[in-house]
Image (tube, rainbow, N blue to C red; front, top):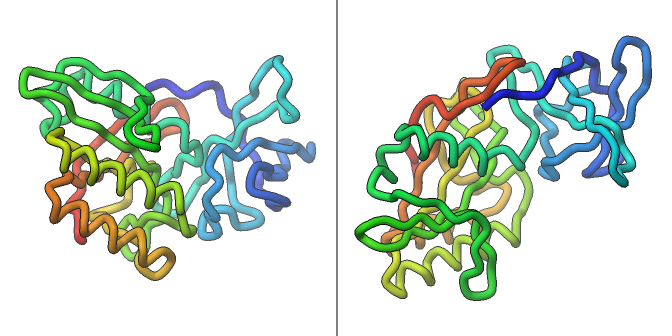
Length: 228
């Protein structure tokens, strides 16, 4: 997928989960942060970032934080992108685990949750929840980077869907290129890791994909081994 035109800048501070302060060509800008995770390893004062302008509407900020430049990879900070990246890769036939599914319906209700997608094909339905991962430690992408009650609820819903006769999958979109494997971040949210392993034992698929990221475009590039 193509990214909007980007403006380079330097990250200064993050006064709250939704706002970052960026110096762009000497101008101090308030920038929207779409990923509410901690991202402490990414958002370090003085680090190069890339922002995108957003026009009109009732927004309080005119820019979105799009990318952070790390030593080995650009990292996307937009947690809204995994849905589009997954849909694009599915339509292009670049997701072998989901090759049997022909249609994708976004944002579907199941039980007491809303999941990111429902895939349908000759063999039935597959309910999919997508998670954005940005933290990589010694080559291993890990999720979450902050405790996530919502994430735990989604995994429980996938277990329910599987028990009720459907296919179900937790898919982690690693929005950077330098990861070589994926696993749950047990140090930060041990309950999420416990639930993810429980889901896997119950038959829920667990997949992770790393992205190729440039300042012009992003795409799902490779499947990562999942270490539970």
